[in-house]
Amino acid sequence: EWIDSLKKAQQQFVIMKIPPVGEMMPSVATVSRQASTYLGDGDYEIEDSDVLPRTPRGSSRGSRVSSLAHSH
Image 1 (tube, helix red, strand yellow):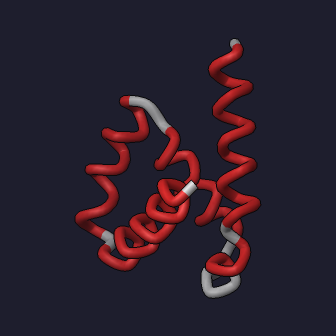
Image 2: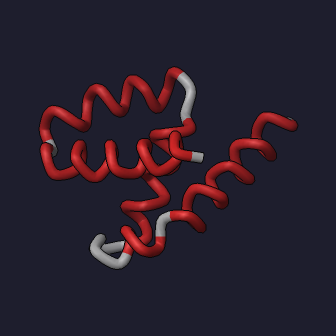
């Protein structure tokens, strides 16, 4: 239970840090999905490795999001 709360808080934190970059992105849905991908456990890692090779643009955006999160 507390893990879900922690993930939710982290996700909101990441989304809140994104807006300057996010203005260049087409939709908030993309941002929140990437926040989940960055935070996620095994489920998201599997999805990540499945999705990224097929969407090169998504992978460059994803690395920008994760480097932003790592800088914290």
